[in-house]
Length: 291
Length: 285
Image (tube, rainbow over all chains, first blue to last red; front, side):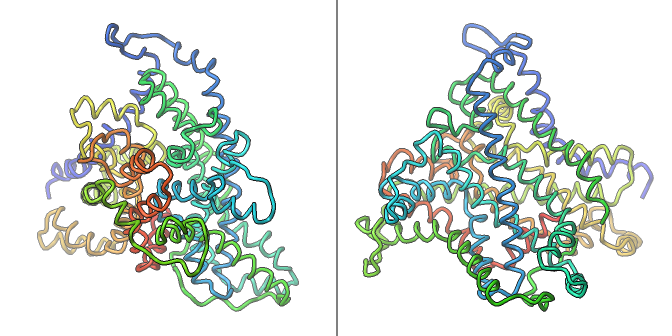
């Protein structure tokens, strides 16, 4: 093969993928920033440069702050709980528990269901009067409660759905990691007189750190991306109590058709994702490299 | 990190566990398992029983498929199934072809700017098309592709994740095999097809399962870019159906919900081990 052909071949191989990535990832990411300093085109008036007007509007937009705050609560409520449950699930499925084949199936099944379908099922589950939850609480004698209709409980109800959907997915990564850990470590720890809890805290958990990092990054990205259930369950209500950032972008961009402001909101999401990336490469990668 | 998966034998217990605490733990594991299956079981109950029993648990309640029949006829689900099938097939085919070519270039060619290109590709792992909906809508509009199945799939054709996964796999192929084929006069493309692709078959299968379930389930972008029965995938069709037509007829809504999830659910139950292994393999980077 001639040297020249050798230099061109890799670029030809990369060309289709790079062209599409440029068109639908790199260009839109850059264009978002550009469009965020432009006004939304109207029939009578084309788009023009408005500087930071969209961002100024954002600072004064209470719904934006509410969505950002909700998203933070959603992330904080979802991530630690689903990771803790995922570790417990993996330990149980990996141990000699009775019926662990069924348990693995039960834990993992939510992962393969579409979020839209899951949301329908949970909407039914939460329905006042008819829903299973209501039937259980009323059987125990608790008062009726509209979980999705109350500002104070709607976000919590959403967090439960997200944890239910994600924990089984994270479980399989821990399962893979656990199967790569030699049982002789546990034997050695037992010989040294360590309790099971000490073994978990001092040996197992540190060894699982790379997995936890991977799962954490995934969970952080998901907490920004996961909004499908809102369309079915609450549409952001009541009173924006369950609006998340991406859902708000959808509303601004495709219900109010305010593309300039939607671009500015998207920039916020891109900044958040960049922070996640920095966190991954700067801080955590260094700490988990002792393996 | 090991890739050994799903081996059923558990290691012998190193720690002496009191029977009481063992029983307690088993109970906790089962309680969680039942909780996890409960919403689904409830939906199954409602879908397979007449509406009168949808919220009343009577073991003698008659079973019925009428809810599924009603749902099927109440909305163009056959068309939605067709759309989704076309969509996932098209996306997967494009991802496999583009990903294979790009991964091969990154794994086995030395050229200037390779690391930069790789970094630019990996950027998509953080900035997914899912969050760039506003700009991508603008682009599709400009291309005149709005409300087409191609537009639903196009932003996902080049998948950073697929390229990454295949690159890692191709890097493990022994150089000698590559060289031997080249000595026999095979071109770069022939080497790729004869040596690399066959060796990566399990990775292709793993990636295919993950990709199909992702795009079968995808909702937000299809919702925005599709606007007619002819293009709408199942997820959007289900949302339109359950939010407008049905009011609160839960029997029919749960039947439609289970119907749209059924292919994935049945596939998962039949190929449970492959599914779990695929997700596991795909996730370990």
